[in-house]
Amino acid sequence: MIDCLGFHTDRDLDTELATLNREINALTGQIVIGNFHSVEAGWNASAQLSHCQLRAHLVAEQLAAETAELDRLTAAVRMVGDTTLGFIAYVVFGPAALPVPALYEVRVIERDGGYTVPSLVRRRVAAEDVVETERELLTAVVARGGHADIWGHTIRDYRTQVTAY
Image (cartoon, rainbow, N blue to C red; front, side):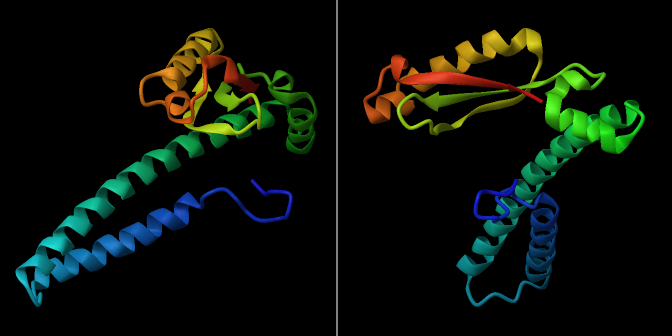
């Protein structure tokens, strides 16, 4: 995604995963050699390695999901026949122009400023699960320790936005 100033705002997951893999290889090499100035430095390197491995696993899962989503839309655009016209139809008319069932993104938004509540966005929601997902997210926003509890809001201060893609 490119914002209004022309800056690229999406994470480059391929580059992030490659960077993590290089970091994992470097830490693994340090641990194998084992030439640390203290015992704590060895423990810190081991902890940093396990943290990097976990992050790499999470980024790889996210990258696989994004790739599957792009493949789904690419296949739908190609089914139209002409890829250029299929893409234009998708941009102009939305997912209804493509021969695949639409998936939905459900997000909780503050009514006042229109800000998306952090961590309350669900993507790849099927049409039959939209209402249940909206209810689940609104319950999470007003739960004890949730966004509404932190900022002193009530459930009336939030709304859900459902977008098909």
